[in-house]
Length: 355
Image (cartoon, rainbow, N blue to C red):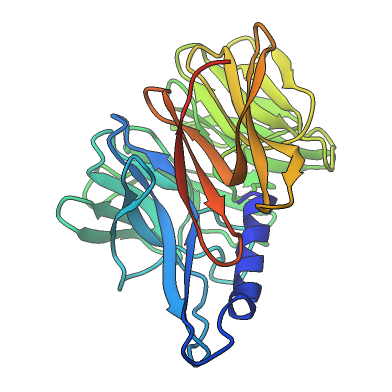
C-alpha cells in the first residue's frame, strides 16, 4: 500500500466520528473507495468500498472493504459479500504496511482473485460464490489470466520471506514453486512477460525490484535498483516490454517516474518530479499523473495532469483527485477517486484525449 493510501486509511479511522453527528437526529453517510479496476472491455469498474451511516448513538465500525461493481460513470452498481470476509488494510499481526487492497479481475469480469481478511479468495461475480482457496496468505500479485497467484505466508516483520507460487487453475490449487527472498516488501508486485514477475525488496540504499519467474528457485533473473512497484505506481506494457516505475534510489521524497526496458534494462527518467500515482497510454506517448506538488486545499486533493512525452504539451484534467489515476481500456476515459479522505468519496470518470 502506498504511504498516501495508508495515510487516507488512518485519517479515515480517526476522523469519522468527529466529522459526523452533533445531534441524535443527524445522520451522516460515510463512504470510502479503496481500489479502481476497469473490466477489460470497459463496460464496468470494480473496486473495494466501505459504506455506512452514523449518528451520535452509532458505534464506529472498523476499517473494512467489500467488493463492489461500479457503472462506467463511477456510480455504485452493486456491493458484494457484504456479510462475508472483508478486505482490511492490516494483517493478522496488526501491521498496517503489509497489505494492499488489490483486485485481480478476469477479462470478462466474471471472476475476482483477491485477499480478504488474511486469506486468498476466488469470487464468482455471476454466481455470487465466494471460495477461500488458501489461508493466512499475503497476496502479492496474480497473473493477468488468473493462472498464477504469488504471495507469502511469512509475517510482515520477518526479514526473509518464503515466496509461494500457486497454480490457482487447479482444484484444489497447486503449489508450483517455493523459495526464500530477503527483504520482500508486501506491496503489490507487477506481472511481466514470459511468466516473469517483479516484486519490491528493501536493501541498504532503499528499495529495488527483483524479477523472478514461475520456475524460479529464488535467484532473480534481473534486479532493477532504486525502484519500487507500489500500489497504482507501476505500469507494464507487454507489447514493448517497458516497465514504468517510481525511482526510489535512496530518495525520501523525489520519487521520479522512470521507464525500464526489461529486454535491454535501459532506463530513462520520464518525469523528474514526484507523483502520487500514474498511468501511461498504450503507445507510451502520454503519461497521466496525480501531481504531488500541486495540492488543492479546497478539495483536499491533487491535480491530475497529462503530458505528451513527445511534444511536451501538458494539460490539467481535474483538480479534485484524492487517489488513483486509471485509464479505461479504450483509453478514452479516466477514472479516479475524488472527495473527502475522512467522510465520503466516490469514483469520478472523465473523458480523456491526448494533449
